[in-house]
Every structure is written in structure tokens, then in C-alpha cells.
Length: 336
Image (cartoon, rainbow, N blue to C red; front, top):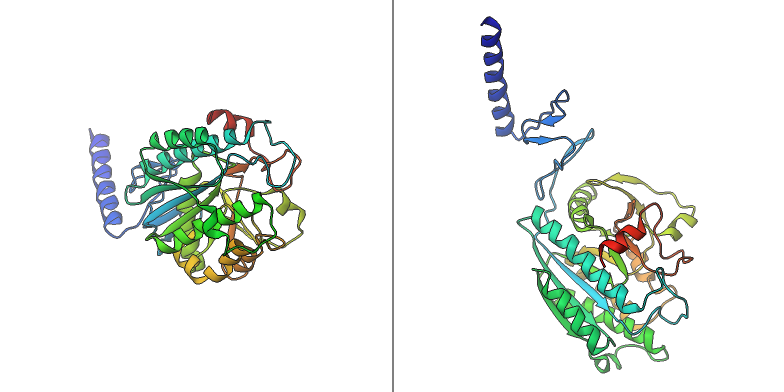
């Protein structure tokens, strides 16, 4: 009986201690039970709280000062061009519309998982399309309807950009520039916090959006400035012998990079502050086209996930495509 009384007494003081820790917003770890009593979670679960604190073992807690309120995902589609100005085939050797459909499905899957986690973030999807067939547009709209997320579809009127974009480009390049320019103008015009610009050949993992949200808040707090996140770990970045830094996100490592393609997540504030630079990508094809983005990365951090959260469905031999060290076939099949 004496032992029972001691156990009850111990449990009582433990409960009081946990309540006090919660009152002062302290977290405690019970390493014997591999749990956090203050969070009522096992340590292999997500311990962070969106908009409040990021907790990474064993590094401790970062109090979030940059809270995300909304995310608009702008997907630029074009099912009529397999690879711009190239005759190469893509990984898995499908027609272009198949990559577009699977990109949409993978994003919707990832958004739905994020929505289940983040109750205080508003999500919506905008598809901006150039030169897709009527049949493909019908299919895109069907996929959007299944998303349970606010969405819009817009067919871009290319004639409206003839006096804005410099002449001499191929039809494919002109369409690509017009689509990016339109999505950029929409981001500038619309209310919103975070904008995710996506090309229609990136297959996303289910946890991609969730990891990017947690990591954006954490890194923006650490750097104390707006930044850019990429979903993909590009192989060509390993060919550059550049110094870099590694940071801990929620479940992924992230490394500091200074180049990217044109699928990226950033804030409306960064877009507004750098609009003139970004607008150049809609007006002229610079070599490389992404050069204005690279200039932004000299002042605002750009981070890439390791391992990748999405892979670019380019040709198998392209250094701008297939991310290393992930199961591409599994991810492709999951989004059939």
C-alpha cells in the first residue's frame, strides 16, 4: 500500500508540473516514454504548431514570428507542347497531358493533407492555361472539381501579350512567357500571403505542401526576411562547386541554393518588392530565363529540400529534371 501511495503522489506532482509548463508555454520531454507530456504526443509525431512554434529534436524550439495566413497555388498548364523547343521524350514516355493531369492530382493530394493539418490557412488553386485542347481542358476542370478546394480555371488570351512581350520568339516560348507574366500579374493584383507558382510537370509527394508551410514559417523567422522555397532537389545544382548551408525543416533537410527553375513558393511581399525584376521574365527571354530569380536569391534566401518533395518530369538524362534519391516510379504510380 505504501508503494501505491507514493505512485499516486508522484503522478499528482507530475500532472501539476505539466500544467505549470503549459501555462508558461514550456515543453517537456519524457525520453523514457519517447513522448512529450505537455503536447500529448509521441516524439515521432509532428511537434510543431503552425504559426506558433517549430520544434525539432534535439535542437529545441523556434518561436514563429512569420505566420502564413493563405496560400494560392498557381499552376501554369499547356498540354500541346511536350518539351519546349525540343524533340526529346520525357521520363515514362507519355504525352504531355498525362504529366499535367498527374501534376494536378499530386498537388490536390498534397493540399488535402495540408488542409487536414492547418485549419487556419486558406487554400485556393488557380490554373492558367495556354494552348491546351478542349478535351484536356475538360479533364483539367474535372480534376479541379474533385479537389474540395476553391479553384478557378483561366484560358489566357495570348493576343493581349503581343504588345508586351518582345518579338522573335518561338510560339512555345511566347506562350510560356505569357503564362508566367499572367500568373505574376494575378499574384500582384490579388489579395494573399503566399503564392506557389507551379509548372505542369512536377509530381509532388503527399507531404510536400505541409513540409513547405512549416519550413517557410521557420526559415522566414530565422532569416527575418521573406524567402523562396523550391519543391525539387535539382541534380544540376550538384554540378556547381558552391558553398552552401544546411538547415533543418520539419521533416526534411533544406540547403541554401542560388539557382532554380520557375516552380517556386514565395510571398506577395517579395513579389511586390521584386516585381520589376520578375516582370523581365514575362517580357524577354534572358539567358538563362531564370536569371532575374537568381538575382533575387542574392538578397533573399532560396532553399531546396533534401530529399526532394517533388520531381520534375524532364528527360531522364536532363540535369534539370529527375531529382536524386527518391522513388520516382512509386510517386508517378500513386497519382495515376
